[in-house]
Amino acid sequence: MNKIKTGLAAYGMSGQVFHAPFISTNPHLELTAITERSKNLARERYPQARIVRSFDELLEVDGLELVVVNTPDSSHYEYARRALEAGKHVIVEKPFTQTVEEANELVALAAGKGLTLSVYQNRRW
Image 1 (cartoon, rainbow, N blue to C red):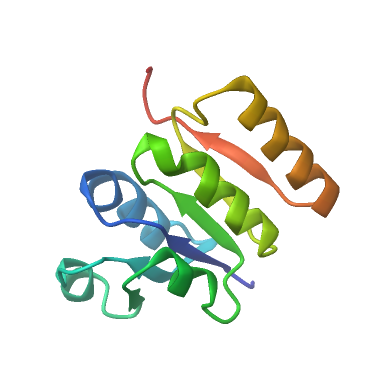
Image 2: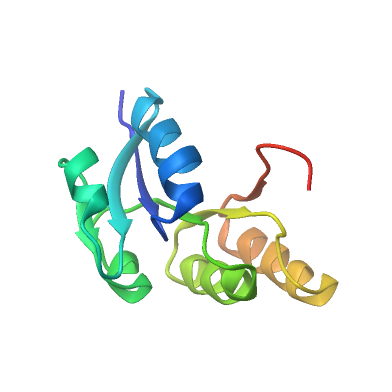
């Protein structure tokens, strides 16, 4: 079985507590790359993952298929759009975007490219 090569856009609290542990233990996913701007916490816990220092670098990882956007809310739209434009499937933390127009644009972009776009919600907002 081929695992889905997955990249994590940030390794803050949600990356450490929710996303990385879930991705690394899911038999269908491979934690391929983690964005950690300055620290090396992810390298210690996930030595098999490539550590990158920027979202741009994450999008350039060879073979990456899925990007989890778990950055501050104000960047969700931009990062999700950029990942979709780069041909990646995308999961975005809540809130999905800051406006309905942004949300509609992302949904249309994903549909037009035949990509999956989903919102991650581990508990109620």
